[in-house]
Amino acid sequence: MDEPLDKLDLRLLQELQKDGRLTNNELGERIALSPSQCSRRRTRLEAEGYIRSYRAHLDRQKLGLDMLVVISVTLATHNRDNARRFSQLINGLPEVLEAYALTGEMDYHLTVATRGLADLSKFVNDVLLPHESVQHVKTSIVLDTLKTFEGFPIHMPGGWHGDSTRYSGL
Image (cartoon, rainbow, N blue to C red):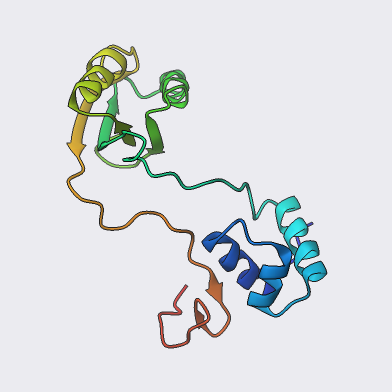
């Protein structure tokens, strides 16, 4: 059974979200714990699934993926088999960065990265639209990125991110 998270666990998670390469010595300095305590806590948080993985955050544009696109998809029929087929398709496409099943008008929301308009056209016309599970596709090209995912909000006792002057309604 998972142990409840205390303030030090939350601080550890907050610091590792900022930089997953921190050593236990560096982490200990930041949250005022010994390196061995940091190691034990980190190992427990990994074992309990709070920390799922560590990875490098790559620059998509330096990799030549200049076009970011939001794609809304409506399925042809709404049943379990069709949803499963669509999920299998999406999970096999490296261009799809994120995929969400939705309530409302559209069934799915995809975030897709391509090298440009020609690759986007091939992706939509040769991959998505011909698939048996897809009825309708609507694309929106991202003009500017205002904010990207930098980590989950960590609720600290006494306030948001430990700062009681910020919102603490979560």
